[in-house]
Picture 1: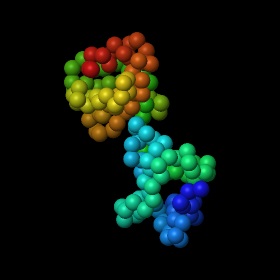
Picture 2: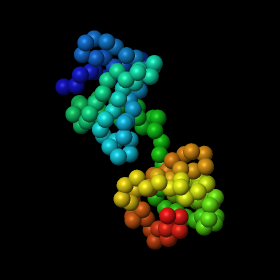
Picture 3: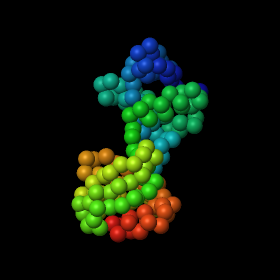
Picture 4: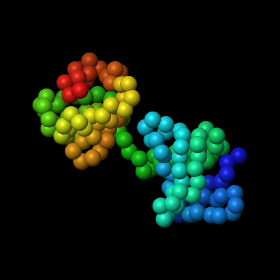
Length: 154
């Protein structure tokens, strides 16, 4: 049993009701560690930007509540996953990368090697010139050509 109830109001906004009866309309769930621990440590922020509730583990919540939280987070977060690197314009920076992501083909401009950040082991975050972040969850799982291109920038 959680310390709150979560539902959507008629306008589609999240409505959070705490055990003590306080109600917050339009709360926003925010992951504390969206990449390293996406299923843990979620705060609910009020419209005023104040934390009003905290969840240590999403798995401890009822299924319908988990789904509401995940839907809301997914509607705000977007981090395309790179599945393949097709080609790069040059092997120095800045360079234009043509990539295939889980959302389709796109191009990104890499300003410098420092925009490729190792998260854990073989997980990378690549930030393009517009600040859009792309995730590469396992660089070892890339095809041979993609790994060869990526190795030139690491």
